[in-house]
Length: 635
Image 1: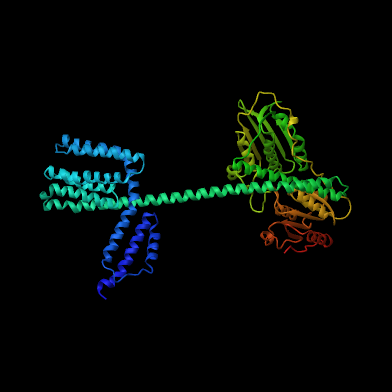
Image 2: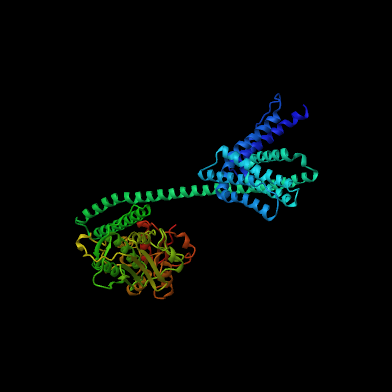
């Protein structure tokens, strides 16, 4: 085998790698992807030993592919160049010639310069209409061959080889590297060189030939720099397109998630309606006191589920842009008074005081009473939730400016950390109140309040100080209406239903104190423990401490996560007082493992996981009451 045949496979390998790299580069692949494609394309490549002239054919195919795949990119670059600077550059041709002729006193080809100006203007006009056609592309190549190759060389010989035009030749070599791309540069150089040699070939001397490598190096450096910039720009454009595509995909996923959530919230309404209907039918039957209390707890739980599902459905409707409001001219003062009795009952059950303060006797405004009722209920419920016993909650109504209205809910509760205020109205956001604390809810109430306010053309704002309280305010702009208000009888009744009566323990037997901030679970625990003891209830740790000293219970069953004083704080307070340190305590928690090690050595203490089993809870309580000793923890 001769040397040519031995080298043939390696050459074909390099050929296929080079061809694939060029193809991938034009298709905007990264360099690593190009090499990977090239290596994969050369695997299994075979040669035909009997073929003649295979090297020449390979080189021709490589050059042809480079040329064909660069045409589209070149036309795009020429179009962008002409649209950006074609008109301005067109005036530089005659202006530069006038400067050389009249200021520097040199000979000039002004006719050629006027021709170049007209060609630039025409090409600029075509570029503004759209991508250049094939004839326009070749016209651009020819204009650059005349203006940037032939013209500086012609003036160089015309002015007897002045140093000025020596530098101009180098300058125009740089310019052609900026204006012409790929194999089009070879055509422009060949055409320009043919024109120069045909006119001034016999005038060339050795000194003139030295300019050729200088101009060539300048042109090559410019071409490489421009190609690198163009590749970087296209990579950036490709990455931008990928980012935009990802953004569109994320937006579509978010929209589908909102639709799914809204569909789930809507589908929950049917089974809830059936359950509430059946519970109402049962309420008309003759039931024992325990069964009636359980039924009332069930009804209240169903009402809470219904309210939460409606809030979730409303929030997703606002997010999808399909929610509507139905404003009507109403007396907002009379509208607010309808809630006073219900909110006062809720506050009294929690040991709070409640008050509605009106700045005037009548204030007619256009608003949706159903939507605004939802917002008001969420704000007042939050105020009740985070205000300790004997606290105070107020609702203020006042006029803002000429046609604005402000509804503010003020409490003297725990307050909100400053870092949580900017995102307090965001969806699914809940305030982090430190380790070992938990806030009921899923973070949709305040988000819905903001959506309702914005739907009325208003806004929400909050002010809060830790330990002093919070002020939530709904400000509705341009809603005051001087027309006569509609009768309040046209508005559906408020949603605040009757509350369960407060429980008092019956005389005799042992006494258990249940401490739970969730009212429904508090009543369920009460009904369960009444099988073995009398039961008193408290909604937080502060009230529990007061009842412990007042009632002297035999056992305390407390939730771990509660607003204000949680279960651990209550346990520490009981153990620090000599009169209460011997009371057995049962702690209910959804995450027992997180506190098991901290309370491992604590006497007269049992830990139970949520959700708990009734039999296990009763066994633990019965054991503590009978033996007055710790009975272990829930595994």
